[in-house]
Length: 378
Image 1: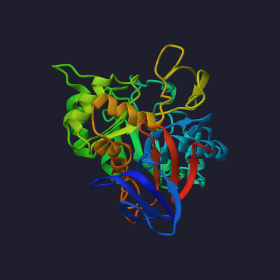
Image 2 (image 1 turned 90 degrees about the horizontal axis):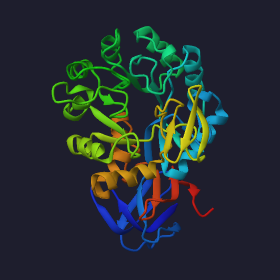
Image 3 (image 1 turned 60 degrees about the vertical axis):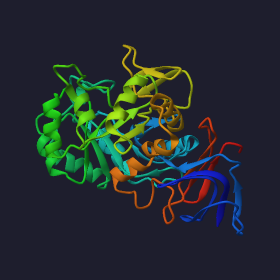
């Protein structure tokens, strides 16, 4: 048994300014004041204790990519993201050839993580619009069919949780309506405002990287952005790095969606954590300078954002309190994926998935299932 003491703890229903939490694999006690038990002590020294972050859209980082289709690469990724406080995630695939996608899915399904937990797969493409490919390869774009999605699901051992899809393309409506256990997310799309809202009636539930690779807002053609803002049936993910979306755009989206339907993601790629230089995404060369990753033609190619920096940016952009902001990092994702009974918040009986941060949101320690598997001082 372990105890983190002298912590500012953010729980589902309150903030404990000076408290302690006792845990093994799960949380057994949360309380205010001084701990007097016999558990092994970890002194938080007044720092912030949050639930571990959940990144539902991440291609790679730290020299690894989900499309590498090797256990070695996934091991590197699952351990790398611990340093940013991420304890669970959805490895995200790319629009590539069907055999390559299946190989990546099979690899993810057969991997046992010793770091952050894999909750399933986010299949980003290949069912997107060839007119909004972004940094994806247009030669591999295909139309969705029920048989093809079943084939991908079999390769992933039924672990596909999110599929990014262009809801306006042929076959999309049928697929969205058929697979009600999968979260279909609109992205890389030229869907109109009306087409987006119609897709929600068929079962669309999510928006992929809001403001990127979709139809923008004008006062006569409100587009996908307005549907994301206004339709209560849609959860909205956003890359909060200050590059993919202006801080004001993030603030607008959060004000309209509210704390329960907004999620911070990284959409990170292989170069995250490696500094400036040349990298790769989906077989295409990527140049990284500072916090920007771009193809040779200038197209943004994912991000190098870390989740703890996403939290810091989110608070700066929206003026939201941490008392509400932690939910966009973990709780909303857990609810959407149906795993909020065991992760996503600090609550007695849930897994001890925790991140300890200083006031600048630097990660001091990350705990997964009760084991401290990252400490900045080590």
